[in-house]
Every structure is written in C-alpha cells, then in structure tokens.
Picture 1 (cartoon, rainbow, N blue to C red):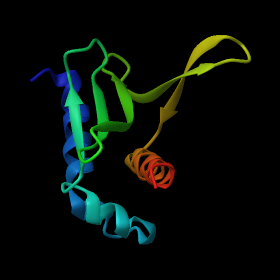
Picture 2 (cartoon, helix red, strand yellow; picture 1 turned 120 degrees about the vertical axis):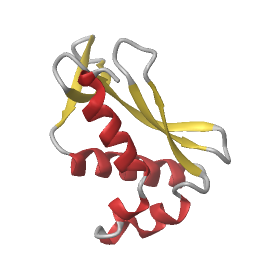
Picture 3 (cartoon, one colour; picture 1 turned 90 degrees about the vertical axis):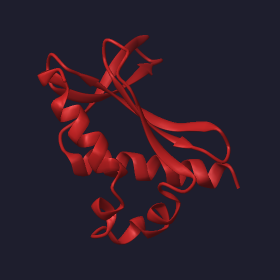
Picture 4 (cartoon, rainbow, N blue to C red; picture 1 turned 180 degrees about the vertical axis):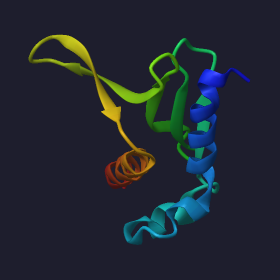
Length: 113
C-alpha cells in the first residue's frame, strides 16, 4: 500500500466502525443505520481518493470528503458563487470528519422524509 494513503485507510476503517460513535450522545440514531442502510465506500482510483457516505436504501450518496495524499489533508471541495472559485474546507481531526458525516446524514434524512 502506498505509504501516503495509510492515514486515508485508517480513517476509512475507523469511520466504518460502529464503536467509534458510541461515546457521542447524538449519534445513536446514526449508529442504528450504519452498516445496515448507510455504508462508507472509498474510491482510491482518483488523484485524490474519496470517502463517501452512501444510503443503500435510496441508492444515493449522502456526502463525501477527499484526501490529498501529498499534503496528508482531508477536505471537502466546494464552489463559492460569490467569488466564483472552487475552495476546500479542511478537516483537522477525526472528530470533525465524524461530525461532518453525521450532520450530513441528519440533514439528508430530514429532507428525504
């Protein structure tokens, strides 16, 4: 395995692990769906590998993050209409990434009701 992707692989495995969410009070509903209807998938075929949260029941991607192996950074690419440029929102910790995916799922589940 490419050494630059070891952090990517570790984070991916940790996101799939239900035990990683047990200590967080607001994540219980998320844990109920994880590995049942919600799954994490990875695509390492891109220049910047992607981890996505996928809703198996609705066959839709809930959200995703990218990984820059050269800079060892996880980020979310966004387009800023105001300045008409693509930007990256950087994640500093596993907890931030975890909150991002759980928050994305909460917003997604409310919209699909």
